[in-house]
Image 1 (cartoon, rainbow over the protein chains, first blue to last red):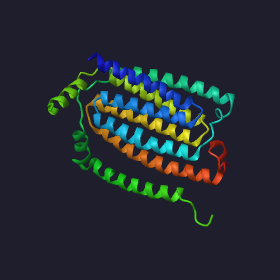
Image 2 (cartoon, rainbow over the protein chains, first blue to last red; image 1 turned 90 degrees about the vertical axis):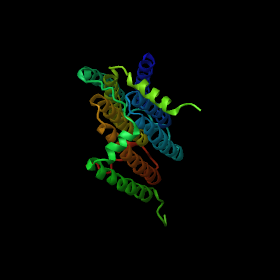
Image 3 (cartoon, each protein chain N blue to C red; image 1 turned 135 degrees about the vertical axis):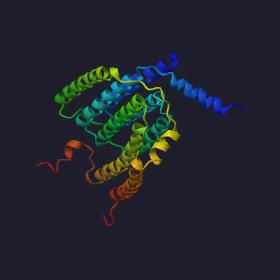
Image 4 (cartoon, rainbow over the protein chains, first blue to last red; image 1 turned 180 degrees about the vertical axis):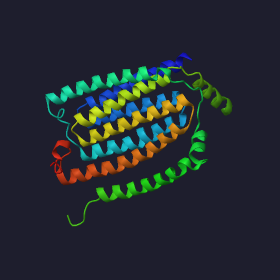
Length: 166
Length: 119
């Protein structure tokens, strides 16, 4: 369908442009909003690649929860603007060279991925759940992530807490 | 009431006639975003912006995982994306807590001013 192609390529172009804006902006809040746009267009690409469950997770977890946390901290700290690039003129030259490097790596990967097959299988959340839980291959890793989340939560509270008597 | 089953199937069918170049485009976009994120980590000054560049790199890797999952017709890539999500959430929570602590103790978020470990 031609609509699929337009949607996918449009999302790819938006992702490239807004990804570039993330590092080209001066103020962190503009970077954060550019990053949200990048994540939403990546979610569109995930959906068009046939993994709808990951696309939903991308919007809910990344563009929703994590970026709200970032915006909350930026607004809480009310940080002053990022004053230019590191190292002045050299920093600006480094950014220009880095963007050239990014374009080069894009071309290299484009050439290298030419022979990859495009499988037509569409995966649902049930497939993801089956892959995750039906064999012990990822089961222990899944249990380990629950411990990781718990310890990260405790760690975040301990680090950000105001010390008593100060 | 519309037939939900038919709706769901037609949506899936919409995805099934995907263009063959999707995987290639996705991988190229992924490479570009990863390098842009790396450049941002080195070039930007604000700690929060540096962390957002790390998130950009993680997103680029997720896109590569999904594209390869699509190319090879397996589910493993998507499961790894699931793990990347949880680790990124934990990393953002702890990292932003550290940023808040830094702001409280130093009143400064410029990465160049944190050089206490420099030899």
